[in-house]
Image: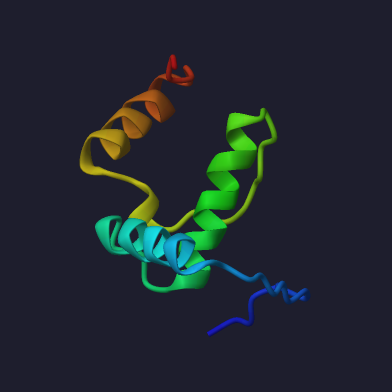
Length: 82
């Protein structure tokens, strides 16, 4: 397995309520770890502010309907409308 290019460690302090909210969200979204949940929330928050964070995509990032749309669009060469 290839090593990930995460060279920085970030330590944060959370209240009990913040940690409970994070864990509830994580379990609801079936995230594998707190770290992955925090990365996903950071990515979503940055995207909401117009910052696009590029990175590798994983199979879990796609649903059945999304994959079908992407396959159709790749055949036609057109981008999917948002």
